[in-house]
Each structure stands twice: as C-alpha cells, then as structure tokens.
Length: 166
Image (cartoon, rainbow, N blue to C red; front, side, top):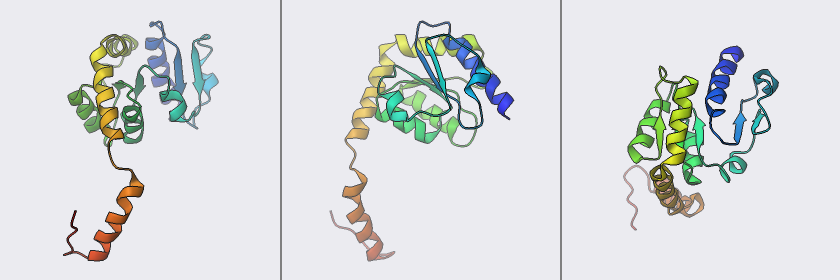
C-alpha cells in the first residue's frame, strides 16, 4: 500500500539525512512526493527521474536490488546499498555483495541507523567504488545487441541441431 511504501521511504530518508549528502529519491507513480514532507534543500523527491541522469553524478545508490536498476547502476560504476524484498532481489543482492560492489541489508536490519551505516560504509570505503568500476568496465566490454543479432538470427535459422561456427 502507498502508506507502507511512504513509511519505508521515510525511514530510508531519515537514515540518509544523518549523512552530509545530497539525496535524490524517486517514489514511483503511486506516491505523492509531498507525503514525505519537506526534508530540506539537500533532499529532492520525485515520482520518476531517468536513471541515466541520477546515476551520472551518484556516489552511491540505495535501492530494492531489482535487476534493471542494479544493472544500470553497475554500468555506471556506482556502488550499492541493497534492500531486497522479493522476486530476484535477494539473489541480486547476494551476487552484488559477492562481487564487492555493495552492502545488503536484510529486512530486519533496515532502521534509519542501519541505512545510514551501510551507506556511509559504501561511500567511505573506496573498495566498493573500485569494484563497481571493475564491473562497469566488464559491462562496457560486452558486445552490444546490434552486433549479436546476426549471430542469433543465424542460430535460429540453423534450427535445434544447428551449430554456429565462430
């Protein structure tokens, strides 16, 4: 429900407010940003902002560990604070922790102080940014979809027993 979502986001913002950082928060279409109150000049709350705009200048991302947001952040070399809830999010968080690109908080450890501590860790420990930048370079080195399409078309045309040569 929107009220529960507002409470969760408010708790995250409360934790982040204890840090000396500028905060950009997106709340989605169901929640009115004004429901979170006036949080001062360093807190910007919007329903939606293009991830490319946010990630271009972000020092860290605190989020739900969804695949799309995770991949966008890693492609931008941004270290993560992961708050997984459901679906693939717990697995994504585990893989990110294993890769050294972020810190994950379990559902029972998400009080404002927990969020602040995890975010401070990611911001202050350069190893997280270095790991995120290594993943960024790996992603940048992957072939783009346009270069793979002809190979995929050939594989499809070859049928179930088809073999593609290099």
